[in-house]
Length: 63
Image 1 (spheres, helix red, strand yellow):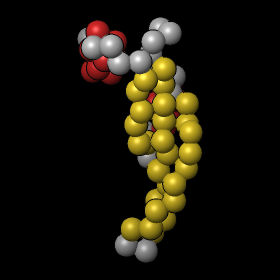
Image 2 (spheres, one colour):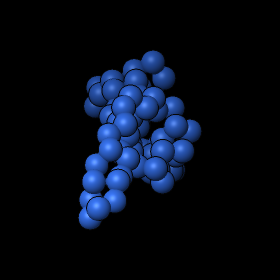
Image 3 (cartoon, helix red, strand yellow):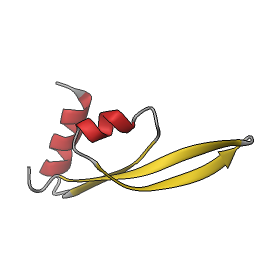
Image 4 (cartoon, helix red, strand yellow):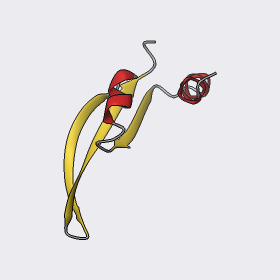
């Protein structure tokens, strides 16, 4: 079984209704494919480089 499917299954069995996560540019397509909604973009600076961090949310109580 895929790791993400296992995580979602355990979360549901534990009564968790909403998943939230911090998402970077590399992982954004994965989380969008899994049904996460992107809520906000945060621009951070690290070692002089801008890094965009997204917050994702997914309601799993409806699934």
